[in-house]
Length: 75
Image (cartoon, rainbow, N blue to C red; front, side):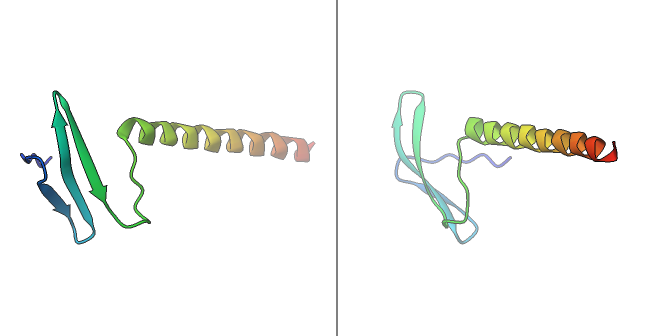
């Protein structure tokens, strides 16, 4: 993990396309702005993990349905 110290209005670059800028600091919260191409998905980590869980649940449901259908066809 790379750890950087930035002040308000300072930024970091990730590659040529992504910039993360410190917009404000208030107490223990830091407000950041992210500029990235439209095709780059940006989510808060808890939202990203929730999406992953939903995708996994959906794929397991689909697999279970396919197995049940396959068993019905064999009968």
